[in-house]
Picture 1: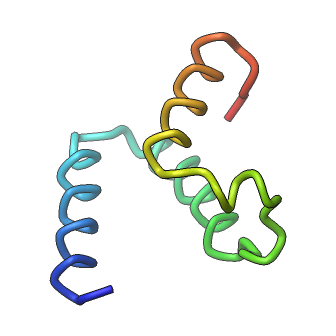
Picture 2: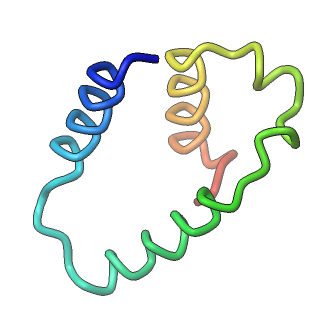
Amino acid sequence: MKQNDVDEILNYISEKFSDEVPGLVKMIVRKKITKLETFEIDSLPLSLRKCTVEKLFVIVKNSLVSGNLKL
């Protein structure tokens, strides 16, 4: 992936989540991000490897709304 593409993705994520957030929430999010940083890519099930980003977001969003996924 080209560096410009990576920068565009990171800028989008940064802008999307740049709202002023209370310190306690930031602390909790940082703890969750640590889990993402140590995540082993090879441990992903085949179904997730084949899933598009768009479909993954739909699955996660619907699961959060229905209560099937707790974060």
